Image 1 (cartoon, rainbow, N blue to C red):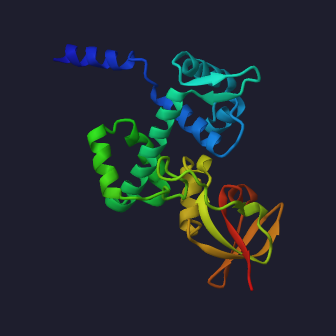
Image 2: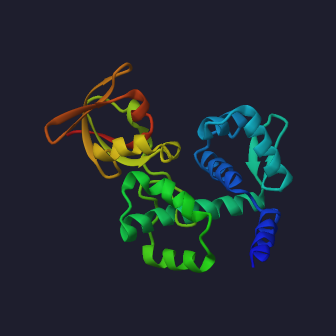
Length: 236
């Protein structure tokens, strides 16, 4: 019995599909492509927090498996096969985030990391059931679009660039922040989540952005403000 299980594990590992780490790369490549950011090894390393040799090895593996291409400028694009797989990964993960939030009751700041773990082992039957339970949502709980349901990123103003004297409505949290649990916890504890409206009485390139809500002020650092996107409107 143990021998059969070992043989099955070996077969799965050598099937030519992406490893868990390669799935992480495909997810990030897809996200960068959708937000019109250049996809190069440096941007992948920055997102994943790994060194250039590690990125180079993973990129070459993805090239060898037919999921991505590299041009003469070392810019990376998804192949048709890679695009299909990456969209599926992101779609399943973002729908899972809704499932974990509304059905399981996982805290907002943990949704991404828990969904990322589950996505890798979700069978087609369970995925169909999860999709049915969640319903026709178009964004993840952090406000980013679900492939196949929406391609539009809502909120085109980054908080650290918003104008003083405007009302700012948070629409989404940048994808690169979702895996940073401490940062996401900070945003959740301070109600800096999609749908929240704040007045901006002051900004500073050193201290960050001051937000006023319910007659209380909070100043968030430039680094935190840089991952919050939304809509800004003058008060009339």
